[in-house]
Image (tube, rainbow, N blue to C red; front, side):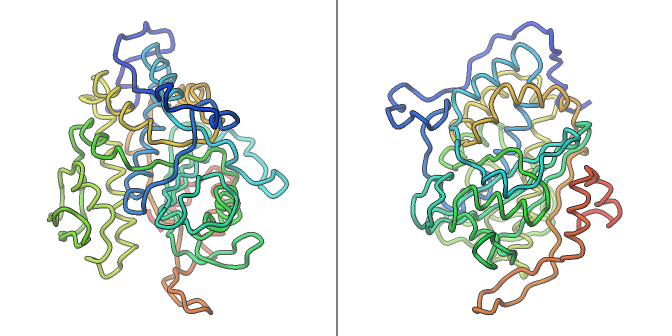
Length: 378
């Protein structure tokens, strides 16, 4: 079976010898690391274009580390993840302003990619900046670990920003850093965010190369139009083999489509599905060198909250090892078309009735039932 148990490692399996993911060198750590978590200093985020695939890879990296974290080799990978990732100490708002933790064992992880065309503000800085989250996804892992959902939040979705009136959801980060972004999503979806992860994109080429490229199904044939790419890329309807620059162009393209960001979000989800299927294919997971290479390329570019460490991943991974690609649903938080705000901004309108149903589904750990009732993706 092509699932996360394909490594064939049980809890009591012997360790497998392999090279470990590269961790930060001592020279990269200095006195500023004190109080910033055991996984090194916080780095400024990369630009919006890089964030698009970055969030996908952060999610897949988390699933892979968790999914194989049951044997000796997997424990080695999880420990190396701790050494190489960056810790985000102040990721959350005050507890009094948050939903209660789930009591059923389900887990929610907020994945963000930031647009640092403005200030190079670090993720957990609560002061105002010119930095926005260009990509936002919530990963919900069911309590029984048999199913996971990845829901994209449109960056221009018009929502209440706690204490700041209304605004685009991606402006929450600019106004109050990670804590306000988390609080905004929690208020929107009515569920507590247990963990936060973000990835910069400096190492994207290495990540996709470590996988040997990714096969992604495109709904439409199109040509990339971004002016800052080295060259345009052509994509066919159907399967496209993507690696490096061609993958980045695939997920960032919006101008080629009449529905712009809506299709871009669909492409991000298709890319993530392709990466997940590549990673859980038997050819990948039975190759310790390839698994190690992917995590070695990914981990140094990932920032996670201080509690999303090897111990947490091992605990989560014990239940995720049987997860298959078909057990992961991708969809977009329901919207009701586009409009214009009172101050003239082009915005995406929330489908309040459907989001209310989604809130109930998240609280009740029934997201797949919510999707089934709506005939698939909202």
